[in-house]
Length: 191
Image (cartoon, rainbow, N blue to C red; front, side, top):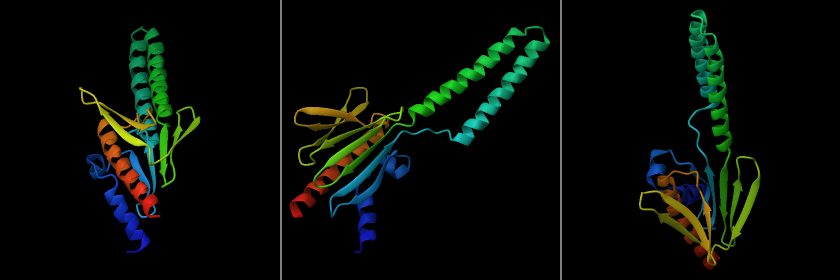
């Protein structure tokens, strides 16, 4: 088996949940090499409306508000035109705030010697956290209402991550990361 086949097989093994099967997961495996124990996962916040879709939506909202405002202005209720403009501005602001929150992301790099998590906040600021892969544990805390939280636990401390993923994606990713940690630990013992 050559190196490309090994990577393809590892991609199949790591991340086998419902979200992956449907192709909608925002937890992507960027690198998977179980033999060397090296993995890279990219967690991205999802936004369903593309930039061109946003432009089309805003154009439709503007056209509708201009028509409604024009009708009210024609019957003498001209102040409504200002509220139509305010409506357009508020919708624009809400979508821009949503897109800004969508810039959040996390990258998890795993080797037999180190698990590092790099977090990018919506503001663009970055944080990096490092863990020993032998000691760190993946904890998925299921709540009574079906929601869940994903944490890395090490030395009595817990670190929350993947908050912007859906509950199903967190379940799938917990399984993927646990499998990757086991492979990295095995590679450390073998290597």
